[in-house]
Length: 254
Image 1 (cartoon, rainbow, N blue to C red):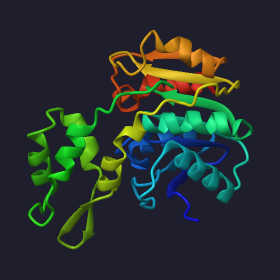
Image 2 (image 1 turned 30 degrees about the horizontal axis):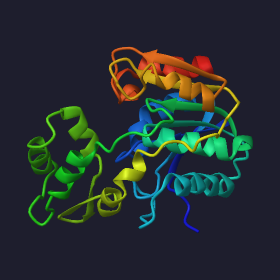
Image 3 (image 1 turned 45 degrees about the horizontal axis):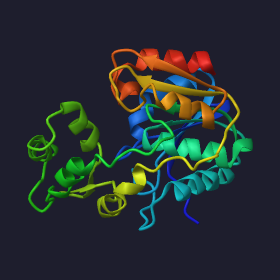
């Protein structure tokens, strides 16, 4: 059994953080360090087919929730605070409803329990065009991506996946073929009738459309003890667009 790769920072109550689609644990390093200073043992986890974790042809939310259970057992974590962003938020929700005894508090960043249509095709297409027999610098990869992805912040986020496989050869940390093949799985809804009754916080970006007013009824169905807060001046990447306010909301809740 392969165990997910993670960065563990600090001492105290275990606080596990799950990144979003095409992300990695590094995306959470700044906030992770802050939470560690607040007195938590922070686990920044790379999910399967992402970051430094193992690659697998199999990909689903059920498997990712199982990966997290294996991770907790491997590190002797019997009860955790769990925070997930976007795809990681979906994993966190499923983990909490499946293993409620293992989660004391749940935090979900800018995603709801409903189904979402596939919308990452352009990004996946652009990444698939990176030919590392020709591209030898990050700047060259950025130039190619800029023809398809106008937003600089999104490109910088994606370019974090670049690494040196060995001297002179770049590669991508994400398992692009498998993620592309399983794109529909990313949008799947939380199974009907599932409930997590402990304290839950949903954080939505004020400029994001991922959580809309009509989602709040469904959120309360699955998470009757949920509170929903708005992170101002922030879109879907709310934790990097307004980290101060994000940190404040989280610490107030905890």
